Each structure stands twice: as C-alpha cells, then as structure tokens.
Length: 347
Image 1 (cartoon, rainbow, N blue to C red):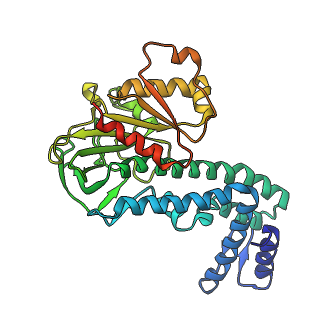
Image 2 (image 1 turned 60 degrees about the vertical axis):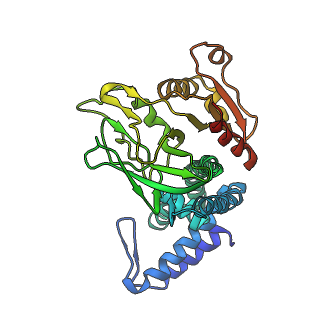
Image 3 (image 1 turned 135 degrees about the vertical axis):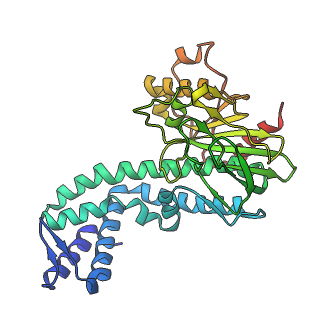
C-alpha cells in the first residue's frame, strides 16, 4: 500500500483538474457522475493513513477478523442457523478489516481537503482518533471470539428466538438468525438473546450484556433520567460480559432480571474479559466486583485475559464479600475455552 501522503496528493490532484468539484471550508459538492471515483480516492487515502498510524495493530486486526469469521461459521455449522449476527461494526470488520479500522480517518481526509491541513496535523488527529477506535474494535472482536468459543464448545445444534408480545410473557420459537444483544426493549425486564439445545440435549440461554448495563440490574428504573438501554444492546460496540443459564426446556425461559422488583436470577456461569488496567486500577476493579455481586454466578466468575499481565488489588481479593473468581489466560488457546464450557457439566 502506498504512503498515505502520496495517496492524498493524488486525491488533491484529481480535484484540481475537475472544475465541477467544489471543495472549500464551507462546502463539499461532488457531482453524481464523479462520486464513485472521488470517494474511491478518499477511501484509498484513509486506508493508507490508518495503516500507517496503526502499525502492527493493522496486521493483528486482519488476523482477528479472520478468526471471528471462522468462529461465526462454527456457530452456524450443523445447526438450524443461517446467521449469527454481531454488532454491525464488527460485521463490517469481518467483511473488510482495513476499511473498518480506517473508518475514523474518513473525516480526517475530508477535513484535510476542506481546511487545507498540514500532513503533521492530519497524522496527529489520526493518532488520537484512529488508534483508540481500533483498540476498542479489536477488544470487542476478541471478546466475541472468546465468548462464542465457550458457546461453540457447548455444541449447540438448535437455536431458539426469545421474544415477548408485552415484555411480561416470554416465548420461544425456532430461529435461523441470532442477533447478539437483542431483546424486546423493556425498562424493567431483562431476557436472554437466544436459547439453544446442545448435541447432548442440554438447554442453555445466553445474554451477551454490555458490562455497564449490569450496573442497572440491581437498581429500580428512574422515572425521569434512566440511561439504561432497556436490555436491547444490538449493534452497540461495547465491552460485554457473557451470562450463561442452564434451562430444563427451551419452552420455559425465565426472566433474568426485574429491576422494578430488584430481582436478579443467578447465572450458571459468568465470563468477562478484562484488560490489565481494568484489574489493577481501583475504580474499574471495584466496578467489576460490584457487577459480579449484582449478577451472581453459581460457579466461580471466569475472568478471561489475553496473557498474564495485570493483577487485582490484594485488598479486593482478600475481601470475603467478593464472589469466587477464576482467572483464565486464554491467548489463542481454544482448549482453554473448552475447559470453561466443561464447568457447566459440573454440579
């Protein structure tokens, strides 16, 4: 791939030679017949810029996107599913990793054209916008690979949609599409996003909940300013936790939480991926402990990490009120995800 400055120069030369293109600080007017070519040049510039500032992250991202595609295919193979849909940004990432990682650079390229910014100013903006965005994107992709690796290890064969006509009654029906994070929106009630039957006839429900949303589970909804998503977090690119519930039948799905009644059903297993700083810094570590005390897991909470970096503060781990935790250094080891799934066969 060319240096981004060379791509950007070609874009500016293209504009100079076409009088019907208007690019000023106040306006951007691209005739319909030139849009495909113009925005194609913009895309080349933004991708080249992103690759330059991302460095090794770009290669890591392309590899991880492939891993996520394989994981999604594993969840579908041998089942009644046609789709297992992640957040739209992650879907775009799996389809074209570089374009997804370069998304924030689009505005920088246009600003560079319209405001006649220097290359140094543009690169500084890219460092501030593209790199953090990409780190969040890769974090969410890795979480998906981890969490649904545990689900895959349970060997699902048939999936069911969970829906409600009135947010009170819960019904299930066979489905060919799972949407991660979806439920009928309700201020008070939380429901699974899907139920599945496994190869050995066990039944499980899962909730891929945005971690911050778990803070609301033990709090009554405020009448004026409640910032919860109402249980429906489909298409949110956010740090999530995986909650797994063992069921007796796919037809009998329990309510996971009722905020109005301060009711929370204990999960059979909770998994959450944490970064080193989220374990070491007092505030995020305390928030994590608060979450796991609210949700409760019948088995030790599985803290998943990429490697051995980071430790919880000793005073937190020495607190008898902190629920049992097991740390798992996963890296790229599928076998460790299978070990976690096996916990659900133990009493």
